Length: 89
Image 1 (cartoon, rainbow, N blue to C red):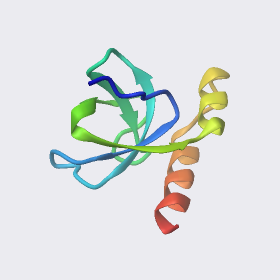
Image 2 (image 1 turned 90 degrees about the horizontal axis):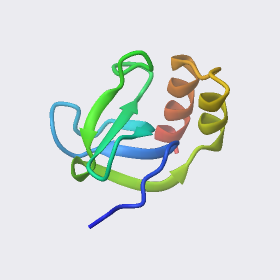
Image 3 (image 1 turned 120 degrees about the vertical axis):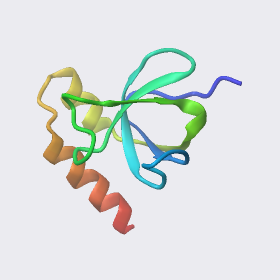
Image 4 (image 1 turned 135 degrees about the vertical axis):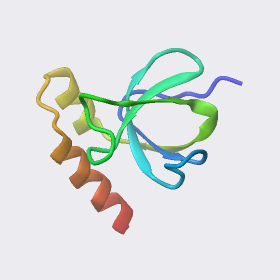
């Protein structure tokens, strides 16, 4: 079963010690693995490698993250702010 996951997509961990945490996908490695960041525990310089079967994938996709990642202006503070605003909603 192939999931349609792309860069900038919001995901939530459903397995492991980080269960319940929200992340953004910053790289799709292959059909099974993704690199994810949250700006706090997992920063851009050390993203978490996670199997997609251990994630809840949301339809929400942040285009601002995609644009900043392409132009290399994305930072951990921006990611934290976006995730904080989403977790309050």
